[in-house]
Amino acid sequence: MAPDILLLDSITDARADARGRLVVCGSHGGLFPAAVAARAQVRAVLFNDAGIGLDRAGVVGVVALESVGMAAVALDCHSCRIGSADDALARGIVSVVNAVAVDLGVTAGMTAEIALDLLGKAAPPSGQLATISEARKSIVFGPNNLRIQLLDSASLVNDSDRGEIVITGSHGGLIGGDALRALKADARLAVFNDAGFGMDDCGVTRLAALDARDIAALTVASETARIGDAASALESGVISRVNRAAGAMGATVGVRLNRYLIPRG
Image (cartoon, rainbow, N blue to C red):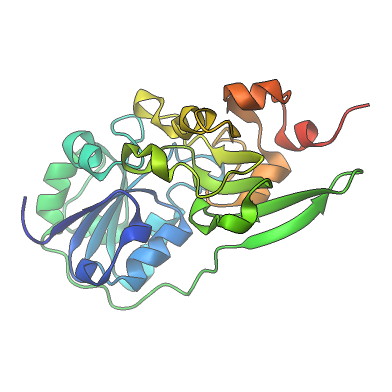
């Protein structure tokens, strides 16, 4: 692999050594991951399209990076596992291309490897996206004043979320296949976006890992809630997969998340 190529299972793992490099990451292509890539001053970046989903939230960051001159593409979630840079490089097929990458000859249907060869000609970006603050907000919901933590990224989970209901905007795939990164705290219930399920149902693999820790977890369908937006999951998300622990708590596929969280009777 060329020295200017960097593999990151999550773009939030980018450090100083990412500057000026071509990054293949396992993150979705939403606005916040795009802003992280711009802040890290990478030269070009490949994301997962996360099923594209509601309002094209899985790839809006790919397009936004045009404004700062950064070449960016998204890989079809059904061609490679979200959360795995190695798999993205090995099996990824391009699905979405921004104008900067198009000018370099990248097109939908290409393999990630071919796209990287073309992106090697990319110039450094001319600027950075406006800072996007990932929301972390505690709300009171429903007639029984249920306390819910809304986190646009699971990376924001911390020890204070132990025993809480945590709704994240993150995909439900294990980062790098590592069960230890499924969730940073033993929440009462954790919610993720299914990112279109994707290759090998990778978009929901956190659920089994959290079952092993007796943590209830579920995903909402990417076409019903914007990935990267926890409030969207609560507002319109429809449950698409539940783990054993969540099923025991009455979570049911096909039911709107907000209806499930409102106590019955």
